[in-house]
Length: 326
Image (cartoon, rainbow, N blue to C red; front, side, top):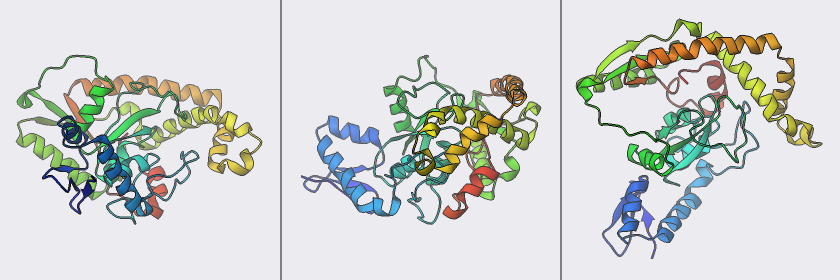
């Protein structure tokens, strides 16, 4: 017996009245536990979806290393002419297109939160080093983080519980006692009307539910967007040079390895000790200041992307000329 997906994104079993949202894994799990659905049926339905849709979406693409170089031809499931985001775009697109209920991605400078924003999925980028990166090609020892995508907060919570990420016991928070910081990062001037409107709507919604929303001033220690971007790039190049050094030495590197990836090693060699020390001092001052800002609030909100998903051929200019948030 097979289940199929309707145009509305629901799955149905022909000989039963059972319908389920393809997107929410925790509901699918409930159906399986109640013997209303088998794992094989669900897997076959997902495979059928992939077969019918991935010719357009191209979420299942083999990548060399997508670092600063353009990735595959993955499209945004909501509009194939628009970008699905950065290097974890395939993971986000597969969830957004109902090809899988959950997926994982790697995040160095925005590659989880930005694709989630562009494809209208939920994502979690946990605290650095919360999840092991064992088995994953590292680009930056200081920034690489494993994150995940889903179609609901409940599913994100389910993954978090399964992975045992949170060890502490938490108590429920009374909304009227909560304080949320509205953060305009150094990249705020690059934010488009969509991001600004979403931030204002979020603040309004929180306020209407009794939450105190206050402007949280980004620390002066950042010294602005240009400096922050420069410091990030130095660490990224330094770590990338080490990460791809062995690949760079391969006999086939000049013909098989992307020139942008090979450039990491060459650029890393050009970094001086003074440049690296400057970056270390910069973040040593900035991170405590960020902690101080965060400690004043129950949570912070800030854009995860500059605006709505751009047209695909504009994506790399957007990713590396304007960053909004981290």
